[in-house]
Image 1 (cartoon, rainbow, N blue to C red):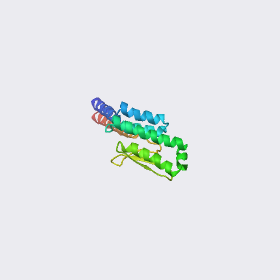
Image 2 (cartoon, rainbow, N blue to C red):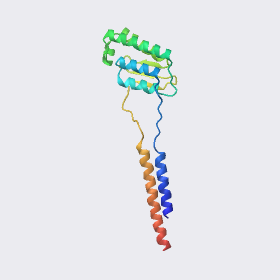
Image 3 (cartoon, one colour):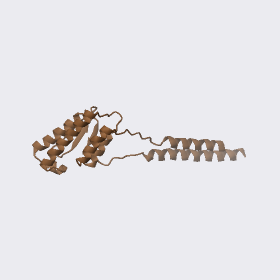
Image 4 (cartoon, rainbow, N blue to C red):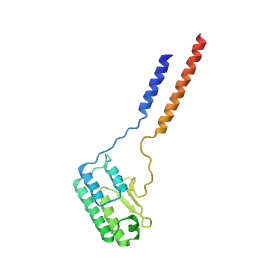
Length: 181
């Protein structure tokens, strides 16, 4: 009977070990870091920088030196246009002259196009969405609170089921022991 309980316990431990979520993250190379550094230098909102970093860290994303140079040039142009127009916030952008906004959006679209991304800008509420060639959103200004990390509910459910199994085995073994006596 002890062997059965030990086997169930060992199984439970192995199941718990298998329920740990594995995380794999790509890396940012020096060329991609130049783009992120430029965004930081232009005081782009941390949320957008984080989304850019997440996109650039993907294993299937590679930026050449020429692409980075082009992207940085577009960032500089957009920032210069915004600075000359006195645009520092989303609210400023919404109040700005349409021609100025169109110029900034055109530079952002040009920067994104270098790495096959498409930008859409909603002139009414200032929302931005960037999608990749598969139409998957890679960045957006509509970011709510996202759930991140491992989900503990799966682990709790597995441990609960295993606990019930161990308790059931204990009850059955006691009944068998009484029946044999």
